Image 1 (spheres, rainbow, N blue to C red):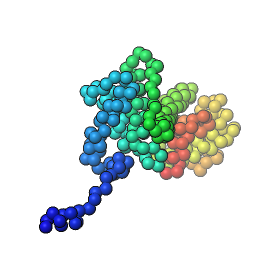
Image 2 (cartoon, one colour; image 1 turned 90 degrees about the horizontal axis):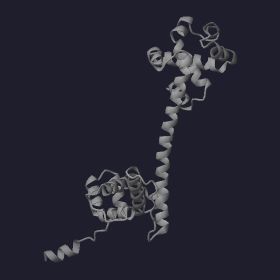
Image 3 (cartoon, helix red, strand yellow; image 1 turned 90 degrees about the vertical axis):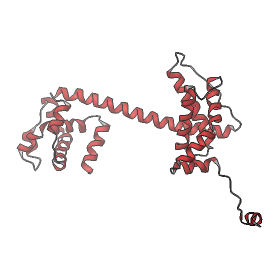
Image 4 (cartoon, rainbow, N blue to C red; image 1 turned 45 degrees about the horizontal axis):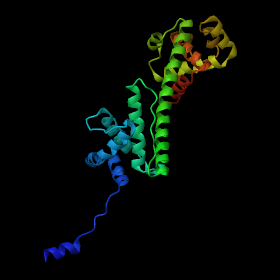
Length: 251
């Protein structure tokens, strides 16, 4: 009787797809995450072995890279990109392992075959990885350009006998005072005559500015170094610093 009742009320459990599991993991199911990673260790080893051209053991450093890459694929996967998780993970694992080998090998030329049963899915996976790589490249490129810009600005400040430490010490402490100083610097940078005086004389044309702004001479003199620095940024090719100034004015 109990068996009959069990059979009567038993519901067929629908098997969850890997992609559905990944979506649950992305929502915070860490137990499922460990379960999936452990289940796909053979897949990870196969992808890594395809690059290394040898059998990979779990104790190998390359396998650890593959494991980390598979986890990264889980975290970054999106079904909207049109690729299966495994095709995405396969390409990502191979790319990361190749990067690892290049860093630890004198031979910088490493190639591998990305052929698979589903060329279309593999292509989609490659596109996703390329997009991620481009994002990484853009971040690194922006960071380098920002550094280069700071170095150029630092060299410019030396011409005016200024340094970053001077700016830190002499920057207005209150937001309203900073906005006021930036406004004065903006007027200075947009006025051709005043800008020329600043560039030629390497000093702030306080007398002329005093007649153009509703701020006392004492206030202008107190913020002299800060105003000069901001005016130089606004007058020059300093993209990132201009964005920062824009943010200050908008807050």
